[in-house]
Length: 261
Length: 153
Picture 1 (cartoon, chains in turn blue, cyan):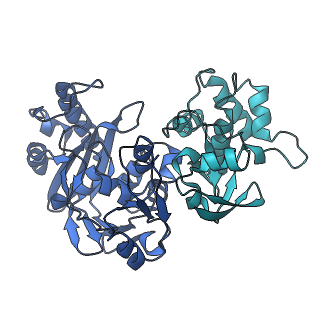
Picture 2 (spheres, chains in turn brown, cyan; picture 1 turned 90 degrees about the vertical axis):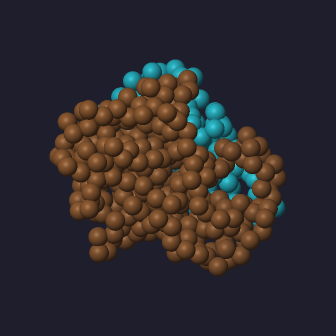
C-alpha cells in the first residue's frame, strides 16, 4: 500500500468537512477498499473512516419502512431486520461471516460493484438513499459499473426500504468470491411486482421489466415460462458466458417466485 | 503515525503505528504474536482471523488504527488459564483437524466465534460458517468433526 493518513471523525459534520479535501477518500468497512489499496489501484492521501459515527449506525422499522444506517454491518442487518426477512437473508449471504462483521450497506452501495447483492434489494424494493445533501431514489442511483449518482464528497447516511408484501432473493454464488454470479431479487408491493438482477450485466444491477409485467398479472413461476432474459450487455468471463447468465436469470427468478408463494 | 491502545488477549498494548498498518501486521510485527497467520492477504483465506470486540474479523482487512480502543483476541489467548488447550484446540488435536497447521489459528478462532453464536451447530451450520476459512490439507472433514466434538464437550 502507498502511505496515507486515516482520520476517524465521530460526527457527520466532521466527516463531511474532511471529505471536502480532494485527496480524501471515504472508508467504510474496508472489505473492498483495503484489498484495492493493497493492489495499489487507489492512492488516496487520506482515508476518512465513517465507522465511528454513531448516527450512521443502527436499524429501525416504522410505518412500513425499514431504515438502515449506512455504517451498519451486513451481520447486523442479517440479525436485526426481522420485519423484512428477504433483506435479512440477503445480508446473511454476503461474503463470509468475518466479511459480514466489517462490510457495511453504505459501503457496498457507494462502491456499486456490478455483482453486489444489496443493489438488487435496493432497486427491487424502490429504496431511498439518504445522503448528507439529498434523497436519491434507487431507480436514479445506480448509473453503471462502479458508478453512482453520488457527488464528490457526498456521504450516504441511511437507506430506507419500503417493506414489500412478500419478497425473495436468490443468488447463484461464484464459489471463490461469494459474489453473485447472478442474483435475482423479486419483491411484490400493492402497486406491482419488481424484479432486479445483479451480477449479470456489464452495467450492473437492472430491472427485468418483461418479467415484472408477466408477474403483475399472476405471481406464479409459470408466468415467466414464455420469457427469455436478453443476453445483450451481459457479462461474459471465465465463470460463465452471457447466454449462461441469461439462463440463470430465469432459473433464479423462478426460484424466487416459488419461494414467495 | 498514530498512537493506538488495544487490549490484546487481556493485556493493554500501546504503540505508535503508521496509519496504513494492518491489524495483522501490528499483531505479528509490533507485538510478536505470530500465531495470527497471513495466508492470502486478499481477505479470502481466513488464516488471519481474530476477534475484535468478540466478532470474527479478518485482521488483514482492517487497519490497526481502526482497532484502537477495542478488545482483540488472537490464537495466543485461546488456551485455558493454566496453559492447557481449550476444548476447541483439544478437539482439533484429538480429531486430526489439522495437518500442516497453517490455517489452524484462523479455523480455531472461527470455530470459537461460531460456538459463541450457536452452541449447538449442525454439520451444515459449521460448513457454512467456515466459508471464509480455507484449508488445503484436511478436506475440512476432520475440522468439522473437531468442531462438532467441541460443541458436544
